[in-house]
Image 1 (spheres, rainbow, N blue to C red):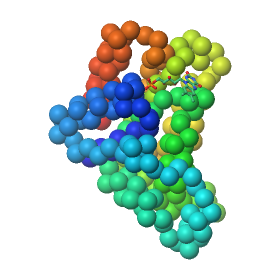
Image 2 (image 1 turned 45 degrees about the vertical axis):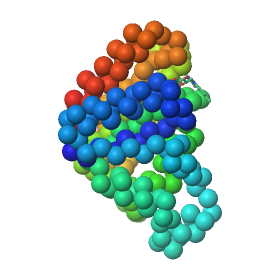
Image 3 (image 1 turned 180 degrees about the vertical axis):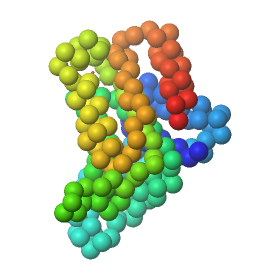
Image 4 (image 1 turned 90 degrees about the horizontal axis):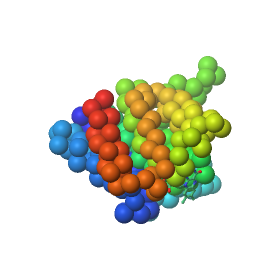
Length: 192
Ligand SMILES: Cc1cc2nc3c(=O)[nH]c(=O)nc-3n(C[C@H](O)[C@H](O)[C@H](O)COP(=O)(O)O)c2cc1C
């Protein structure tokens, strides 16, 4: 199986980095072909700008976007790993989706509505938070993030969501608790 990890965190010593390393090692031990897109390390340009639109209108895709689309096309599975920033994904990842998941590649709009073009691909999302679950749940902040990423974005493109797993309050818990979260990451990967 071919799995693409789309990883968004600027700090290589973060817990998100530990999740990424765990996922990569675990999948390789199961003989997956694995590619990692480390958006900060790549210095990915997340700004959808006028030049992009000019090229889209001429049925052209900028080279840096095309390279990412080729990676997604190659993959059977996508795994997103990112922290919660302002009850959302980091702007870097939002910009990646803005630019890479284009009309004609990820979905097709017509007078009959939109059709997802990435059918057959599966996705797992690992998302960390600073706040504990009990602070976020009463305001439906977790479900709003799940719906926005799962239904609003990935299902819209035809991608089947396997799990959107939140790891809560990760800066404030013990190393043992963080290690058991990394064990849970491995268990979730068995669903692929
Ligand atoms: C700009 C910024 C915004 C943040 N916003 C939130 C937030 O809205 N809710 C939350 O629970 N944590 C928030 N946090 C905390 C991070 O989610 C938390 O530190 C991170 O998930 C921990 O994982 P890490 O050690 O890999 O960074 C924010 C952190 C930053 C830097």
